[in-house]
Length: 140
Figure 1: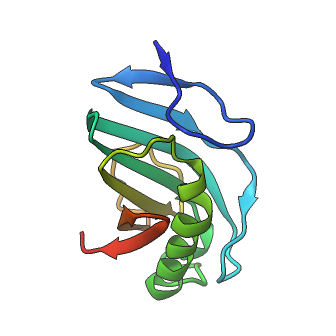
Figure 2 (figure 1 turned 135 degrees about the horizontal axis):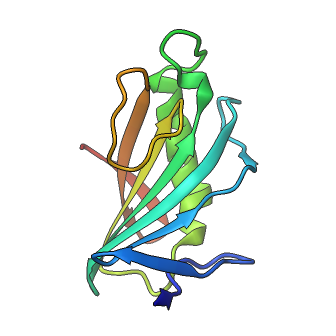
């Protein structure tokens, strides 16, 4: 089964994986962020528990946050994540938007399958609610 769940120029079709979760693989294109670190989209995961609610997870590889060798800390990364939600994620969400919408931006210094942990990995997550055309930082 396929479904359109993202709108962007050249958008790809998504494949429903399990229990309504939809996963789109990322690409190797570097996405510009204010701190100057190199981030690349690894995947977007959509959970849609009902027609009125959805959570989009934009997962990025961000090697500069590595605990031992990194040059970017959480404070710099939060600014980058806000920027990514406002200028990257919002423009890729399928319309019409559900009444309850959450966007999670995640950074990891190494690639990890969704839901897995690794004590060697550094990961940062921030959640946003979407109101109109704005991403509002929410406590996790």
